[in-house]
Image (cartoon, rainbow, N blue to C red; front, side, top):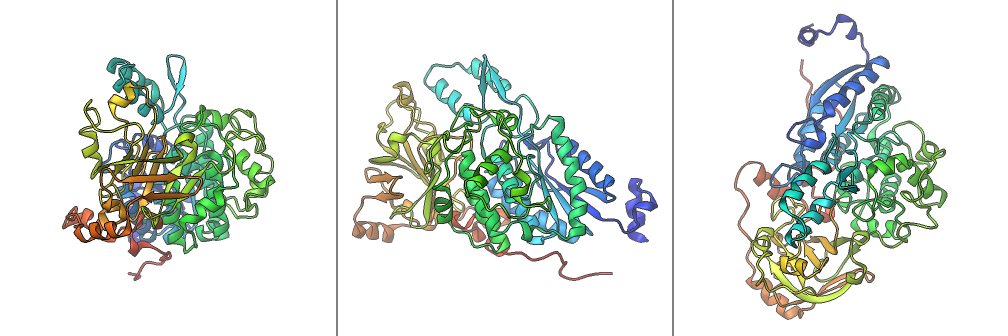
Length: 556
């Protein structure tokens, strides 16, 4: 009686306490996370569906980790979101949960938390913004920020023009409408089977975004009755589907870190090299920024992810019998998918980019734990390159000099940014695709090789080697590089090499000193003490694995 009476102060009648399914709606709504600011309305649509199916919906907030404003980086808080979501789902009397996310870290964070509890769950992402429009051309969030910034540095665009462009770029609710990490992770959630078919791409302001949210509310009640749990959906076969789908859509390199962390929660065997091996035979068929020219609204109207998944299935590149939240297999879900624009979603036999041009995993004495590069966003002529290293210990150190016309950086040099890994920053920020030196931009240089132990935005582009592991802050070889050393990048050969003799590297290692800790208390201390390296998803070691739905000790 005491618990029912407290719930009734919200106006719920006695009839809802009749044993019906209690469905939690975990929402990352926040005005501090612009990409998630409309999720309160999405939640209302989910509630309608739950009520229609005879369930009892209860919305609750979880941390919003919007990349746009939060510092030092939203990635710093992904694990905290996952931990918070896990404990709230477990601690409350819920039978199932709908996960509402938007900006890129909220999707993996909620999936990680739900996986560790393993109650029936379905994901509903908030959808992309409408296409940006500026002076008669489509502009993409994130991608054009970098382009306009470079144009302004080169003197070809004014600050006033940039101010106009920024309002044209983000003209509706929703997350980035390029194939950045938010769009990528929405598609990955669908490819994993955790999101309803076709729901990754509906624009945030499209009525069908709310229709699919309502359907998710109905579906979660049935999933509880069927006892369909994340562990039955996100199997090894589902992860293989997600990796291949990510290659086919030209998705973000950040999907690698998130999928590795998610697999760790579920006990699914997944390694960094799987991303290279599984992606190699898959061409990029989706022509979207930053690799191509279209945007998510176009992808949606062309048929969305189901078209891509059907193409993969028809080519034998999809585990078509993998279970999804619909209760049917992914193959059954997409069997009737049709493409309505072959410029946006190209045929598999005439792809936008050929097989082997997806994300590559590199090895070598500079990255014994691996590194990654998004080939589709890189300059082909730089994928094999040898150049002088110019080293910066922090991103801030580089930014302090990159506009100096006297900066000693040439077009064929290799810019090395270190101190940006999971522990070093801390949080592994999206800083690897640093802008080129202003003097080179003015001279017409558009790309250079950059090497970093951090990440880059999925909306970014360029020949940028990312996630160098082990990171510099823990004594990885990147910490030993000096300006003037030679670095060789060979993407076809999958190698990244520091051309310095082993005995010289040994001498440098003896002289190396670990940088001071980022903090000696608080969450920053917890993070730096327990975060794993990028090749293990940058999760906390103590959160790896599933702990189930039972609370540690029942009371009352």
